[in-house]
Image 1 (tube, rainbow, N blue to C red):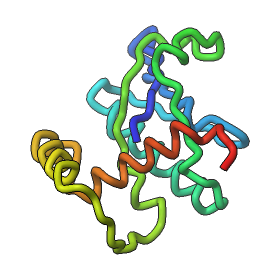
Image 2: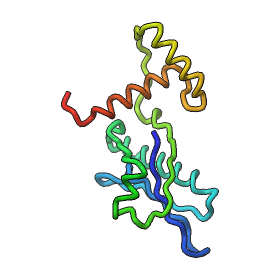
Image 3: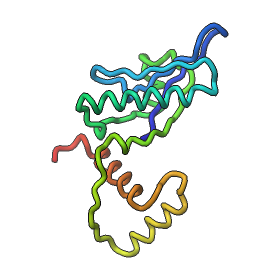
Length: 149
């Protein structure tokens, strides 16, 4: 999942960078981090995200309901006005979604060919066909999560 991260740049050398992950700041949760150096931003916020995901899962929170509203939304929100830089951080949340199950799915050959080409072309993003299908299913469910089933 791609998380939008707000970064507050320090005003002087005695301050640290402050970070927030708005998508994980809902209900009783809040995801914040800090870093002394620019090079530490990604590892520190990634650690904060994974720790928060673990806590949410332990509490029984359904991670499939998480929604990141994106940079444009958060930049316009007065609550996040003091964050002057925004990053996108990709964190694989699949390990928090439960055990994988093998299933049998029938798809038209042309669709499988297109999927395989996309996976090959985006090998740095998709691990394999199953990963592609899981991501597609997640996006579809997420896109229609506000509708009654």
